[in-house]
Length: 212
Ligand SMILES: CC(C)(COP(=O)(O)OP(=O)(O)OC[C@H]1O[C@@H](n2cnc3c(N)ncnc32)[C@H](O)[C@@H]1OP(=O)(O)O)[C@@H](O)C(=O)NCCC(=O)NCCS
Image 1 (cartoon, rainbow, N blue to C red):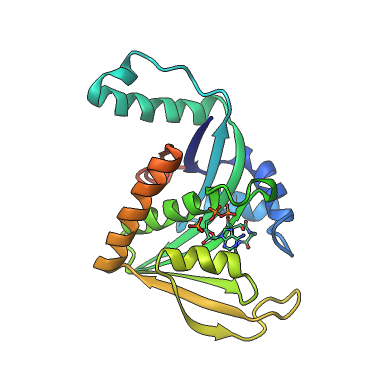
Image 2: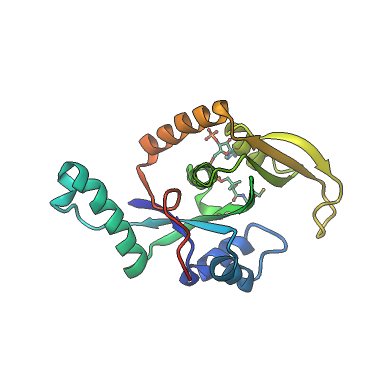
């Protein structure tokens, strides 16, 4: 099995929308995803792609720095030529000093496997690379699982939005982290632990937003 964090692309929308439908009420429309991918210059959509038959190791893989280059090229080739199953997705907007996590979900049958954390770590890493000063998000007050994930990365509640969710008038917590030295240190430790545990390839955090 191989896991790759990469930018969301148009052909991913069908799988992403299926996860969205089983995770949120109301879900985003498929057009919203197309807009985020193609039109919005502030949007950085991510997917976690799982391939069950990863490409066999090549000679380059066994050779020092060539291995990294080989992995990156292989990652890009996978993106172009073959996709695995999308096990989760997320969205990050970056506007001036603020990064905003717009969405995050994992496939209902794949929860509890660490995939949500990989997605969140990818977006926190992206925000750091884009020099965000802080990250904000909204979460249902009843959503203890998501809040626990965010708190693990240092997000704290800083305000309650009354009746924020129109479908049922539930309140939201505004949560945020400032990208200070402590946040960076915590992030580096957690990201390393995640890499050790899951061995995923991250071609999202460091890659520039693909041109459309
Ligand atoms: C929130 C969500 C993305 C988490 O994804 P996941 O793949 O299940 O989470 P992970 O397996 O990576 O777990 C990461 C952390 O989440 C928290 N978590 C996960 N499952 C949990 C559970 N059953 N109970 C409590 N906390 C839990 C823990 O903090 C966990 O860290 P730990 O492993 O160190 O304890 C997923 O539950 C989901 O898609 N939910 C529906 C959509 C949603 O609510 N999105 C958030 C919108 S704000």
